[in-house]
Image (cartoon, rainbow, N blue to C red; front, top):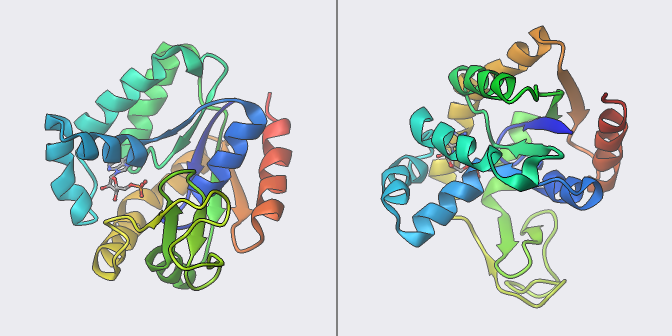
Length: 216
Ligand code: AMP
């Protein structure tokens, strides 16, 4: 299976990706995660990317495409992959099509996780992630039993540096301007599927499975 998850920041792509990885045994490739790892390790690439990330802007296409090209060359992508947070603009989407055409493994579907704009600010500014097991909470809608502590593993809950109100606003603007046009791009390719992201994680995941299980 070779799919792209499309959706605004905070739409739940990361959460669904984790379910999909578990169920289909294919890797999730998140350019956001790859970039955060580079920033944390203080690499030259991470230093270049940090400025854009701190301001909610997109990191340059050449950096992101280089990372994707390398990642898709790894062995664990043989049976497919879930792209999460990539592509983010039309140039990246075209470059991805070209790259996958070269590999003889075209994309099968782009699944849009659709969440009304009004909900996203609360989802993002309330978001907390367990540093140990990756479980995701929200201080407004899905608070942990004990503040700051993961219900699942007791790990420490952390907030992403770019989940503050100012940067979130910018990220949502960037999504509308640069990423939302991908909906029409994939519609024109006949690959777009839309899932209503306002429901429970389980209901959303059931829709994802129904779509993916019908792919060739
Ligand atoms: P995410 O974890 O997907 O929300 O990404 C966090 C930040 O990483 C974004 O706000 C961008 O600054 C950067 N980023 C992630 N993926 C991309 C991409 N495909 N193209 C450009 N920048 C990206």
